[in-house]
Image (cartoon, rainbow, N blue to C red; front, side, top):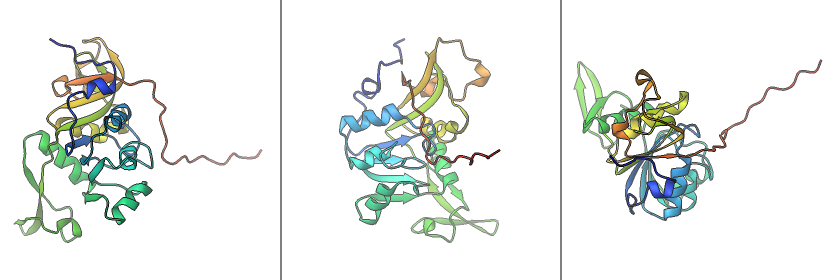
Length: 236
């Protein structure tokens, strides 16, 4: 069987990128974002992208890099409050935005990966989120029909993987990477460490290797903090 391991992000994405594609990107804030793969998408110069992601990074970090280069046409996102360029492009009519409640976004990606084309939820009923969407009454309660998301490519970040692509996430990085990995035709993962197959405890695997088609080791990482908060030093 051919190896899933590629030497770098550019080679791992070779032949997968095209203008106008839908990319499902993992990460939660700046935690667990596929930094190397995002840089490779930027360097490839593809445009007109639709990106489903919890957020769009911050200015010039994470997906914010693709906003700066105007490669993203539409964002399907939940939280976008930390990105000034996102705000500017949206208010100027340069960026299409589909706002989606956080839990609904996670379920839309999980559903897409499970082959479920749509589901009903109470979240968003009576708000702008419900505009133009089908509703249905169940047991006297109103529900919205939300569509599953299934993209052309998923790019995700893990902590550790074996050579077969079985993958472990670490803490908050698990939040959106796991559902995004299944919600696309092909998943490319970057991790901090690749170990021999059989080294990982099977009960500790968060994402089976069957979902991971290509894999890179992206270290070293400089783990960035969105907002640094420190405690004032006490004076003795």
